[in-house]
Image (tube, rainbow, N blue to C red; front, side):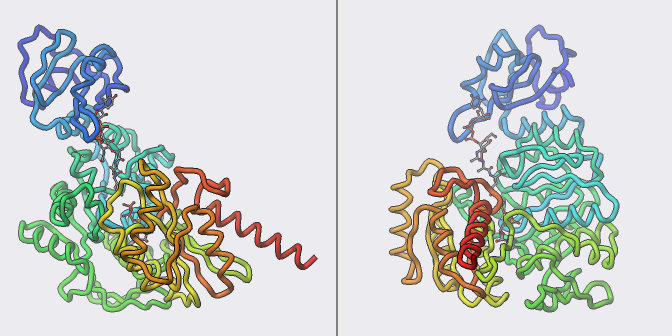
Length: 491
Ligand SMILES: CC(=O)N[C@H]1[C@@H](OP(=O)(O)OP(=O)(O)OC[C@H]2O[C@@H](n3ccc(=O)[nH]c3=O)[C@H](O)[C@@H]2O)O[C@H](CO)[C@@H](O)[C@@H]1O[C@H](C)C(=O)N[C@@H](C)C(=O)N[C@H](CCC(=O)O)C(=O)O
Ligand SMILES: Nc1ncnc2c1ncn2[C@@H]1O[C@H](COP(=O)(O)OP(=O)(O)OP(=O)(O)O)[C@@H](O)[C@H]1O
């Protein structure tokens, strides 16, 4: 790519005496990663303004800077545009040669279920002979290798680079509302776009559910010609989205109870989490490889994508039986003569409801729930999360999650206030997460369940009483300890 092509892309001219054919070597919005010959795009952020780093970027060798305000500099070609985040996506897409054109690209969006559904789609693709990359919350997988990432949806330059490097037949990506709102997906064209559900979350970022919905719905307007949406119409926002898209003449595969749907969900058997569905001319049974009615929906949407790709029901049913568990998604640990412990990534009221209901459906005699809230993150959902827990669990322990910029004392006092306002007598506060988990497990016996939510697969951000790095390490440590105590008693 050369300077002239960038100017054409942004519809810009320059009077400067430059060589329009001089080659661009990279594109970034971060002055710290600029190298000789790069395009630096100045993004106005929530913390700082990228325009303040133009000088630094040029010193490091940027040959083009793209800005939202008029900038003159002898050291680089300065191009002005209306929206730098959008321009960043456009330039990155062109720099890497529109890589989404060369493969089957599947985007999965919604408040909950993106990671789970994406893993299921990847598994179905692989069992049907396709290689499949995946970008999401847990990690990015490209050509069967793990690439570390910090965001569910990578920045536009990284996303386009990963697509370019991927030799996979299919790439399935989780699409976050932040990613859509910030144009990280600008230039990506999707073959299939999947909608799971929309619940109260991220309202610290989006002003209202309507604007959260609008951000999510952008994905369904980024389809390739002939592309198709897969939508859960049992979710009211999903139903609204399907109506909107059909009104625009877009092709939609609807999944849910409505009788006109392509995949009609007739019933869910909560003993084995199997859906009785009607598809084509036939009734069929689709069993979720993961527990929970929410996972039945994830399974059905993954099947719906598989059907669009031409996979047969019987192949998919067989494939699902070998789905490996997904880290931190209803991950089960059984204690010998002790409780069943579940680690789950639930961090909204609805997902807490689903996870606790699933534990009950599995026959939990007594149910203890351990959870907390992230510092700085959406505070509007916290009361409902406590309410959901108080109704369903026999007892709940409020504890710390990531503090982010909140202090320990601030978060403890927040927990106290929340408990007073929304909690009941079955709840208490144990700030140290490892001590809270220990307390829940030692006070539970055979047949009881302990559900720990919020962190899922993630590592701890701060240190706790026990020197472990995650809920999983803590639970496994407890398993070892309780086993050795039992051995000592028996000796
Ligand atoms: C809240 C949010 O979305 N923040 C994103 C936003 O950050 P920001 O606006 O605060 O950026 P900033 O720090 O002010 O910097 C502004 C610009 O100056 C540049 N800069 C900054 C410093 C410097 O020395 N030089 C320089 O050039 C930065 O590279 C940036 O382009 O723009 C940045 C650059 O595009 C993103 O990296 C950053 O994502 C941060 C890491 C993040 O954590 N985002 C989360 C909330 C997020 O996106 N989460 C969703 C998943 C949500 C979910 O479903 O759970 C995700 O897709 O991961
Ligand atoms: N279809 C669903 N409906 C409601 N809750 C769900 C659904 N699928 C999963 N969950 C709950 O949400 C949690 C997160 O699931 P998953 O990671 O698949 O979603 P996600 O959309 O990727 O979440 P995030 O955006 O936070 O990474 C699960 O651990 C489970 O508690």
